Length: 454
Image 1 (cartoon, rainbow, N blue to C red):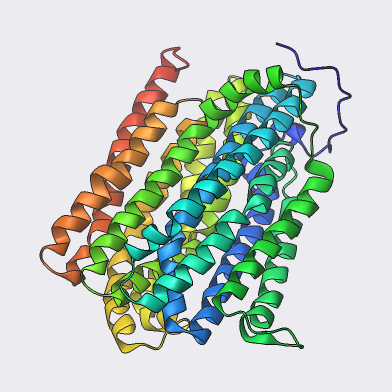
Image 2: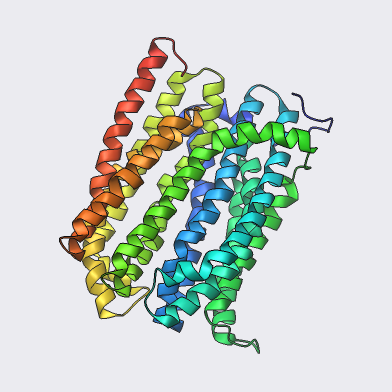
């Protein structure tokens, strides 16, 4: 099915042509740094958000940890749809079907906005019972409900920006999304102390101020990426047609992130049986993880359209090289995270909290979890590899293995021994998933060598 008649928008010369030029290292060196930098800024402003809330109230910090899984759902739905748009657009560009690439983006925008409406309504209904099940302190519950409702109902900026950004990335333009992320982060960081504590004549809003600062930053990012990333929404018949490839390519990412949400909810529930401090430690870990996983996540964002492009051209050897180089680069960076978690865990925790129980629990947790970082490179890159080449089943299987079959059962079993042992579930789950992924990867490569494309 051809797209409706619409003029092909001009694309930067650094777009799909870049994916077909030069060595893999040169391509990654050109497109990865802007993505990593934007994710660095995003991670930093998440850290700053927690820092200011922690300065305002310890219960507010617990509230942010409790609401964090729901925020991951936002990421899952928004970014997952964007990944489907990104991957399909890259394939259309590889086949010189530029009009259909633009129509894919327009259809994706409509699907993303509809998803936001449904999610906002659902989150408003379940927010209070969800928070009450995950925190003991009544103050933490009230803060969590307030913060959660604002960031969920106000998440339209995230849903729109996820599509606009992927439009740019499908064309190889990583710089504008970086600028947008920086602008959004700066907006959030500037507004945080003003709205939380009340500065310049503005009344103090507390934890609600942190939520509004987050929403404002997301809207700023959406506006900047939308100026050149917006594509006209096509007729309904085209939206229905393009929804299938978008979600066929994007649902592994959505599924992986949703599993991520479920396992954090379950882990929070298990940790609630020990103390609110243990829940806070888990939330702080994920804040710090986002910082140290920047190289891995940035490279993953870049290789999906690059792998999809090379696969559509039948360059299977390049696909193998992209995967291998990504793992090598990410592991080199990940050693920094391992060193920090092993040698300065208390200093990392001290950025946010000074509660003795949080520091005591967190020191043990961070040192054990840090052991999982190296195998995590393989276990997290494998699903991206299979998703990019259109192999949704192995991608989903690895996500289920890592989070549902590995981490949750192990976390529960270790919790029966004691709190300090629960954290062993993290390295164990990563090692198991990496082993399963390696077997699936070898089968895929063998299939290519024997002439099988799937």
